[in-house]
Image 1: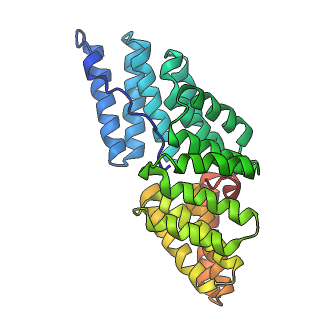
Image 2: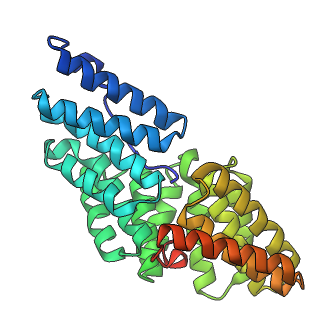
Amino acid sequence: MTSIGILNRIILATYVSVTCLGAADWYALYKSGVEKLSRRMLVEARRDLRSSLDAAGAGGVAGGQRAEILHVLGQVEFQMGRLRPSISYHERALGLVPPADRTADLFNIAQAYRELGEARTAERYAREAMALSAEDPRILRLLGSVLIQQRKYPEAEVVVRRALGKGDAAITAMVWTDLATIEEARGRYAPAAEMLQRAIDGMAASHARGRVLSNLSVLEQRLKRYREAALHARQAVGEIEAHAGPQHPDLCATLERYADALRHSGRAEEAKQAAQRARQIHALIGATVDWRSAKK
């Protein structure tokens, strides 16, 4: 998340030949979809990109250009919490580009499988991406996170510390969350909470920061810091809703955590309201993912 595309994909302007109306149509729709994605107008972005893909197919547009549309569609679906459709688009893109150009789609597929909790499959795709870009810190961090999902903590710690050593500020905060997860697994909740707070301090308000706040609230409940847990869970709800929308699976899970913290704080009525909202979102999205197991 944040956070899907790890490589700067080629913008297609230099490849477009506006020799027929169809070519102009698909590219205009593509640009519109990308612009709407940048403004988080996800439903509208998906509509324009699907239309672009249809127009590109009808107009005989080259495979590499159709792969770019599929790649962005995969990003949109991921941001909407629709993980299997995201995987499907990225898989289709893989079939249209040479091996050397597959890193970004492999990365995104691995990321989606990680979110689904299918860690072994995620690891396979992450290693394929790393074979193409062995020193990319974002790929290293992704691989470390799926190793954590499989409880391969010693190997995971080596990989994520290697990512941290690359000095990439864009992933530093999330590497601290990975290290916190390893400490948590060792039963060292206080150091884990400190690592999560360090991560939060280095992040701007975002969906990803909301998830870290949510994880911090869980640790604080384990440490019986219920007031702090409720505060951080409430902040997490606000950030996830603002940046991922009112029906995202992460919001559902965080509301459940917020309800737990409120109950432990003696705020029963507020807890009921949070739990009821979580149930409503769950019913709307038909969520089946164990969010805690796929938190990274």
